[in-house]
Length: 257
Ligand code: NAP
Image (cartoon, rainbow, N blue to C red; front, side):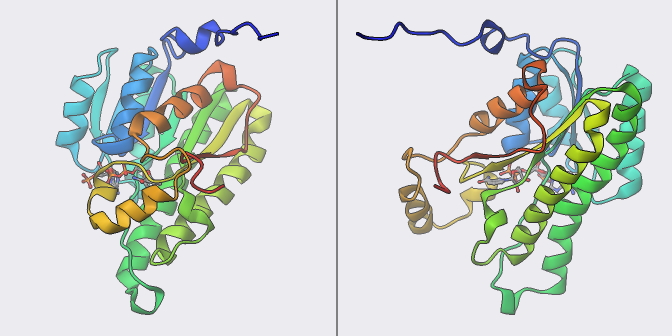
């Protein structure tokens, strides 16, 4: 006998998962960060789009509605991170969601990697997540609630030409799991998402032949889109995910299977 089709829970489809929430998304000026900002706003959140490129951040924010604003932020600068989080808290009186998405890559084989390439990636992709998580955790602990979602990468498990990036993204996994343990008593959840191969400016520079090789390794047969990552972020940021913390979730079409 065929099973009756079971619809998804209403809240997941409703478009108001995040009504009245205040969210910061870093690196929201384009790519995955823009996709995340768009999805959180569609679900009713007021989004602070923070990016080192303030023009992009402001232009994304102006298209979102729900009181979204753009802000200039270099996540590798500790005092800028403290200042942004405290400005948002002062302006809105709360901070419910932090998405640490900003990231860069500076790929090179290990034996050719410069100190600068190493340090730049660690500064943005790892220290940036620490600075923002530390600042937000102070507010979320006091409030007794909050959601932190960190964008790591499938590369955290090791990838040729990405010693700096893999080390930073593995660091994000360790940081997320530790923060999850420390903040659980304050009902703050912390999870990491590991996108696979997503169609953004970061991957558009890759030569066609290599892109095709990568896509051939994806069981679902296509590159991901920012919206594929954003859907999982929205869930983790919602009340529906209140019992999920310390998880490391692949969003890669089966890339790492
Ligand atoms: P992207 O298209 O290059 O966008 C990154 C955004 O972050 C840009 O707007 C960039 O600004 C901004 N940014 C760079 N440095 C910053 C800083 N110091 N402070 C604040 N903002 C900064 O990259 P993406 O593909 O969307 O990647 C987003 C995240 O997903 C990154 O953490 C990346 O590592 C991760 N990820 C991506 C993939 C993928 O396949 N695309 C896979 C796994 C993980 P500018 O415009 O000024 O550069």
